[in-house]
Length: 339
Image (cartoon, rainbow, N blue to C red; front, side, top):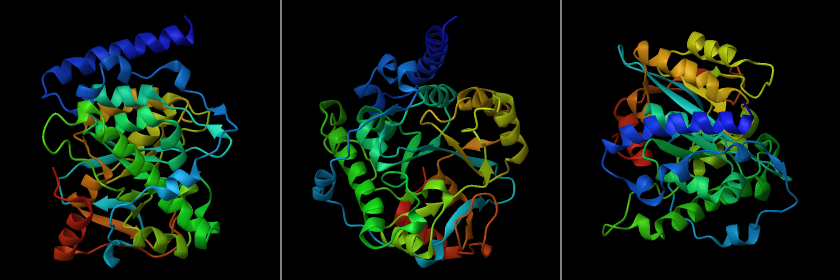
């Protein structure tokens, strides 16, 4: 059986399961604007391709941005996980949508289809360039109430080495790409059947540094722009083509814990990520875990914050933020009330 046929059969199975669940719910923005067939991923979107086209930086620079308040001091730093109250078993699955200059990255619809079929919430960290080259998929992720979008830099460069205007561009122009995507979605006729239209965040509240690296200047710049820096503490290693789906799933199941933030990829770099999630998610559900977005996870407990960014181990002081009343005020000011 060819890869294309295998992909289509798998997608059809997932769509059928998802449609059955969706029919029991009130039709929302996602289902008003797209059919299950147009939402389903395709094999042709998986692989990154070379591209000599560039970003329209002039258009991004001209995009009006909303007023954004800086992140409160107690939430500054690199958040790796969340300490939850006893008995709470929540985790956040996160997927990076990286895209560099000279390449149009992929879109792994197998992952998104699976999450929708399983009713699993997730957070996607998208680069500004990825949002610009994947406008329709960006709109779909925005419209899905189970997903949230966070920033991942403009062109997936090492922001620890940037300063001044270059650093600002990576943050502000990524925000501009999000604002453009949001505005385009809300302008669609399917998005405004009611007077005020659907509620979508006006700006990106979360940021994940490319390569998991940052500097004090980058951390400060992101916080001043109103974005909470999100790291991870469970690494799937899914870009490694030698890792089997079983190995990735076993890593998740072994290392996961209440309050964990799991990092994976949905830009075609995670070769076996979808198959691994198909193994891991049912088992995690059996173990009593619930799936939430990163924003919801932050509101559920106390963030574990490192002074620096890191890959596997913090290179600076790590602390659990004891925010008490300030935590509630600070988080609500950024993310709004929890659902």
